[in-house]
Image 1 (cartoon, rainbow, N blue to C red):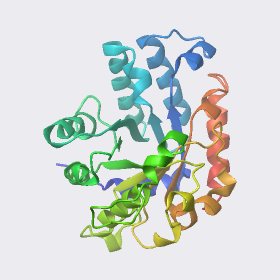
Image 2: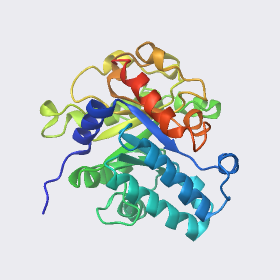
Image 3: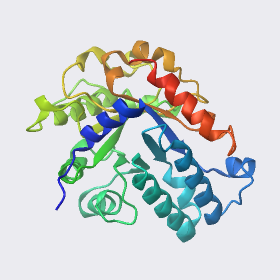
Image 4: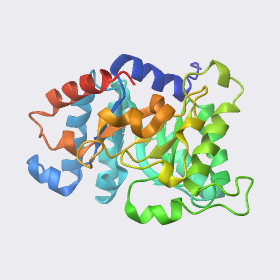
Length: 292
């Protein structure tokens, strides 16, 4: 049996080798049309494989958006299985953006599908929705860490509709008085720090999702509270097309900037199949030069 390499260690290696750019794999209908591909299982498979090919050797991380495959039913899932396998075979860290969340055996089933070694949908990490309670995710986080996988828990998203919920303050909790966003970040950070080997780790195995355009103080989050090891991984969607500025990472994220994964999707994908390889190479280099 091969040695399990912690997800956080693999993320650190990807940062060291390629920087922190994460290329989104989002084959929505408009992009498929622009790429001259059919809006079908065959089209999303070809799109995904081309993105993987463009990213391999230039970026270290890709994030397939599951919904754009899922809408094609069985053919879409078959395409996604192929894309996930090709990406992992290419040495990319693969984050499945499925935003799963539930309780008990149902959530365990999701974990088995996306994080079990040997599953046809195997990814390296999975996005999770914590709004049935962060504690419901703890068994999956343990299960993931045991096999070298990671999770990213929604914490502070940039869509306007989320702000009222995520800035609400907890009442009946050990974290009473914290906003929901702050409690999610603190809870995941604490879980990482409580791991037996935490002091020796660069990155934790569990991370959070924070939008690149979020005003953290407005969300009740103090970035200065997160400066100790292991670094908290932060999946930050919204750079590029949605207005996030990579030059402002330190300003926006403070000490959390050390763990920020710069996720760019449409701004890269919109350059088309002939230009995407050069675009990924250029953007990966630009992001790496930030030296965050």
